[in-house]
Structure formats: structure tokens, C-alpha cells
Length: 83
Image (cartoon, rainbow, N blue to C red; front, side, top):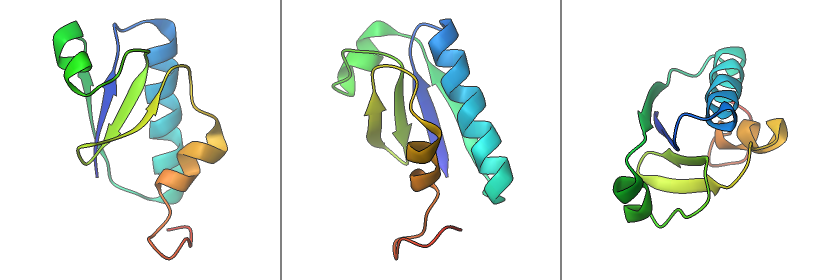
């Protein structure tokens, strides 16, 4: 799973990345994490409020640190069952 955190590197961006890493590790999901800090690149995703989260090329969150439950849903299989 390819995950990108969109943002300036602020405390909220770092907290978002740490939360995603903790949840992925707890669920045993292998992720590749990256950061995008360039404002034009972030805007290219249509994100105007950071932090933003992109998973496998799709924006799944923008603006503020996501809740743990929301992050856990990102790691559920298509049938809705936790991995």
C-alpha cells in the first residue's frame, strides 16, 4: 500500500504519519510512506487543507489529523472486514 502525506511537515502532518504507521503496524499491513511538501504538487491532488492523505493515488483525507477509526477503515479489505 503506497501512502503519501501531503503537507508542510507541520506537527499535524507528523502526527498523521505516526498514526497511520501505528495502525498499519497493529494490523500487520505493509505500507510505503512518503511525504509531499511542495504546495503545487499538493494542489495538484485538489487538496487545499493539510494534512492530506493519498493512498494508492486516491485522496482519502484532507484537513486535520484523521481519527483512529477512520485510519483503521483505510486498512479494511473490500468486503469491509479488518485485515
